[in-house]
Amino acid sequence: MDQVSVRYRTYALDFWGFGESERSHANLSISVYAAMLINFLDNMGMHQPVNVVGHGLGGMVALQATHEHPERFSRLAIVSTPLQGTVLSNVAKRSGGTISRLFGQNNPTTTWTRLVRQLPVDDPEVQQELYEDTDSLSEQVINSVQKSILNTDLRHTLSELHDTIPVLAVYGEKDAIVPPDHARSYTFFIDDNETNATGKRPHQLVILPGVNHFPFLEDTRIFSRMLLDFLSSKREDLPIALKEHWRRRVSQREYL
View (cartoon, rainbow, N blue to C red):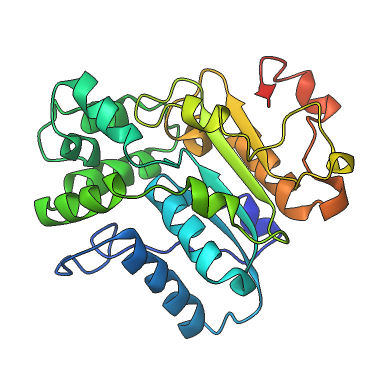
């Protein structure tokens, strides 16, 4: 947000049950959160199309809201986002526990808590906020959101997305929660050898090697440059290309 706010006015929305929002809401779901996002835009007076960036569950919500209200959004970036909710059930089985562990119960030995506490976050304030957000999640929120995620398949929704809304999908190669393979094999996204001349929409998939579930925290500089390039490029210049001055610093990055 710090980097993007240099060019754009930015807002961070806490879903019900997360961050500093109200905890008493029941029956939370991706549809409820999508409606919450639209209500937020209305109440803030944002009636012109906006760019939206969503991480994980937030990416699922952003995709659903963009599909239902394409006139409200201009570009969509999803990060470490399950396109098919059942992909998380496989992660839960491998971790030896229920999927609710992934959402941060107060047991420090759970998969989610261990992952969050191992993240290489340089900013102590951001790091502490991550810990507090994880530890404060209630069982009611976990169960409600978990059920909605597992029952959601957004692949068809993504395919039906309005032609005028470009999509950037970013995943970490080493993501232990949302493995990028399910997105990599999805033909919706353009690859490095294709251009707009092929007639395909400029929807791009980027896999960041060596990065886990929080690309924007683990490689903030590269993620911010990539996102800003996506948001500011003209449609005819999409998909974004790896800049030469990036190559000297991040030659290991693979852009698909």
